[in-house]
Structures are given as structure tokens and as C-alpha cells.
Length: 252
View 1 (cartoon, helix red, strand yellow):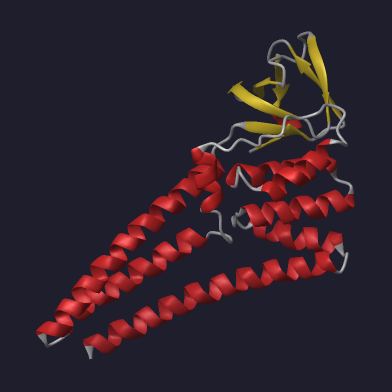
View 2: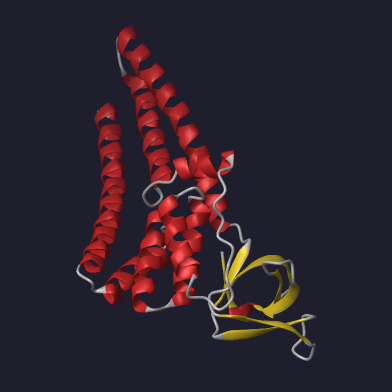
């Protein structure tokens, strides 16, 4: 009876996770279908729903960038391509698209295309939205079920098989948790920003009354150097340093 109870609980939990993953994938494919039919506004809407719901992947950001490029939203195009490249630094498709989009900018950005070992690792582990996190949960649930079965099974052979399989799934789950944490920390770290206004006057100090250091235009990428409650200190391509109000940037 106990064995059946845990089996039903496991099947319910696994069904819930599977349903959630399928629904996410279906929504993503719906966005792709709109894009392929040249309904770029609808595609952008669907991709944005996934984005604001907390799902992330380089594929999602790349498709968001493509939709915004077709809609003529240059700042959003650059922003999403850069987010995609952040998660998959060695992806040639993202780099190619970003270089094309950068040709439309008044202030040209430097497109990162390095082949460092860590870049290749992040590119290799890129996957569909939250894949590693979902896989970690599934593996640990399976491992836990096998350990519970170890307690209720009767024969020594069954107990041994259940125990070692459970340990193996825990080990694989630990690896996938590490991969999920790599993606998550890469996702939440803030290193750069994109100008989202037609043009922005950057200041020499974090004050509206300070002198103008220089002007940057929509879609320009800047590096975040420092910040306070209202301002970011930023660095531009050639090492120019200035301050910009936080509401003028979208950071990533």
C-alpha cells in the first residue's frame, strides 16, 4: 500500500513537471509559427510572455531579437541579441545577427566573439528554457522514489538495484544542478546596459546639474562600472567614463 502511495505521488509530480515543460514548449512553438508567417508583432507578444514569466534561454532571446528587428525596434533588438550572446557566448548565429543589427546604430558597439574556454562551456550547455533546472528536479524525484522503494522492497536484489540506481540519479542530478546554477548566475548577473532612449546626455557626475560628458544614442551598449540608488556609472567602447540615470538603460 505504501509503495503504491509513493508511486502515485511520483507520477503526479512528474506529470505536473512534464505538463509545465510541454506548455512552455508549445507557447514557444506558437511564437515561432507567428514569426514564420511574418506576424512579427504576435510573435514578439508570445516570446515576451515567456520572457516576463521568468523563462530564459539563448533561443528565446535570439527569437525576441529577430522579431524586434523585423518590427524596427533597434534598442530591443540589440538588447535581446546581447542577452542571447550572454548565455551562449560562442553562438555564431547570434554573433552574425548582432553584427547586422549593429550596422543600424549611430554609436557602433563592439561585438564579443571570443572563443575562450568558459565561453565554449556556456555555449555547450545552452538548452531550451530552464532545461537543466527541470532535469535536476526530475532526477532528484526519481532518485527519491527509488530510495523509498529501497525501504519497502522485499528481496535483497531489488533493494540493491533500487539503492544504486537512486545514488546514480542523485549524482547526475548534482551535475545538472551545477549546470543550472551556471546558467542562472549568468542570467542574473548585471554587467552591461543598452540605451533605450533616442539619445542620452551622459553626465560627469551622478547629478542632473552636472556637466554633459558625451551623448550616446538608442541601442548603444555600455558597461556598468558602478551604481547608486538612481545612477549607473558606465564605460563606453573606448574607455570613456560617465554617469547615466537608471531609467535610461535596460541592463543585463
